[in-house]
Amino acid sequence: MIKTATSTRIAGIGSMLLSLNFLIAISTSFFFIRQTIIFLPVILILSIVSILLVLGGMEGLAEHYKDAKIYKRVLIGALFGIIGFILLLIIPIIFGIAHIFILLMAMSFRKSFYTLADSSNKHLFRTAGKMLQLGIIFAFACLIGNVLFFTLLNAAVFILILLILLNSSCLFLMGIAFSVSAKAFFSLNTNPNTPTYAVTPNALLNENTKSTQETQIT
Image (tube, rainbow, N blue to C red):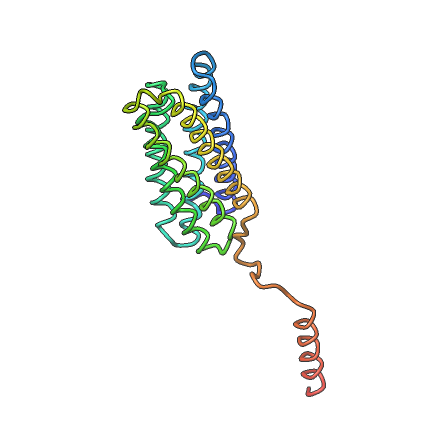
């Protein structure tokens, strides 16, 4: 089994790469032909590598905190994400079925981050989950706009611009969310020998007083 400290580093690196991946994907919202063809293979490779890193790291953390839901939820999200990014490469369109799988990935990762926040008492994971929640809201709005784009052809140009803005906002929020989760992973303390409470001056004074009294008694 991978050591817990190594798991946090692996998951942190994976989250950083995922953040970069979503930020690169924003370019596909503005450049439709040449840039999209260039970036999609990069996004695919980067996404699969980063998702597998996060998955491997979260497995170790699930064992450390003895909570299988941490790993199970991120495993489901990883499967959705890999399928989504592969579809994005096979069908190089801005808004399509690939985005539904990426949306499902974000929903599963959000649940896993919430569970990890409760287990580790690291609130940054909950912040990352909330950022993913906002990205999910924008993604739903984008899917609704996608339906309108194919039904209200008279307003196609307006809806297309709106879709680009919604999609870019969604990708940006998800990129920031994984950046926050990376910071949480790297700052996560999994050393069981390290106390989780803060030592205050009053506590030290009380301890010294107690020791002095015990010495006097003896």
